[in-house]
Amino acid sequence: MEDPPVPQVANIIGLPAAPATRDNRGHERRYLGAGPVGRSASCKRAVIGWAQWGHPNGIPVLLCPGAATTRALGFSSGVLEALHVRLISLDRPGLGLSTPQPGKSFRDFASDVDEFSALRGLGRPAMVGNSQGAPFALACAATGITGALAIVSGADEVAAPWFADTLPDQLRGLVDLTASDPDEAERFFATLDADTMWQMVIDSSPASDLAVYRDPTFECLYRRSLREAFAPGPAGYARDTVLAMGRWPFDLTTITVPVDFWYGEQDTSHSPDLGSSLADRIPGARHHIVPGIGGAVLWTHAEAILRTLLGHNEPLG
Image (cartoon, rainbow, N blue to C red; front, side, top):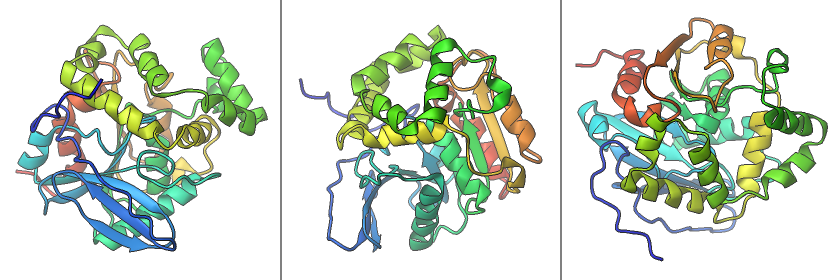
């Protein structure tokens, strides 16, 4: 069955990206733009997909999307315009349009973001890390390539020893497998697909989140993004998950840029303590708990998240 037409405006979700084509010219790395305004720049040896929403000349904010989703799922187009924001979302290697990178690391991703920012003239942009995109965004902050950071419903470092006795049995087993045999863990995660991921989200979400996820427009765009993420195969998602579920190889205490953590009070999927211990490990980090919502807080409270993030750089009118 064909996907329904993509709406021109979806304020809670963001304008969806227009289709992009892959341009692989051997020895180049080509950044492919998709969305209301498409751009490209080149260097090195691979392809990275990206999409842009909001004001074309606005304040750049990079988005690290959640697990097994791509640049095609943005958020709050109306807020982006009002705040003069240019939201740029990147596909991680092996997801969507980005070239697979077996054995990729957090350092590799941070290096890609640094290079992309330099090519696009973004300076040290602010960044939003959502769900499984959180540790990748934190890796960027730890290397000093982002100017400010919002972690929204961020996946926690569940392999940290202080969570050893608090994790559900199934998750504890996956964390232990990732620690003892990461290759086998990666093979297991590679058995998942877009439909499985969607069902996991639905089965673990409170009613407040389901009101967002089951909206017909949102469901269409979210599931399309999942299919797009798995289109090159499951290896990109599997590698992301092994990295996120293991010990993180960067020191959160060295992060010096402003960081805000945002969690819905009904979120039971992303962090055993709703990001409290993460925030405690970063000097000066601020911790926000949003009532009446769970993991969908990025799409219900985008204006507050963006205003706070941009407020670290310059006053907003």
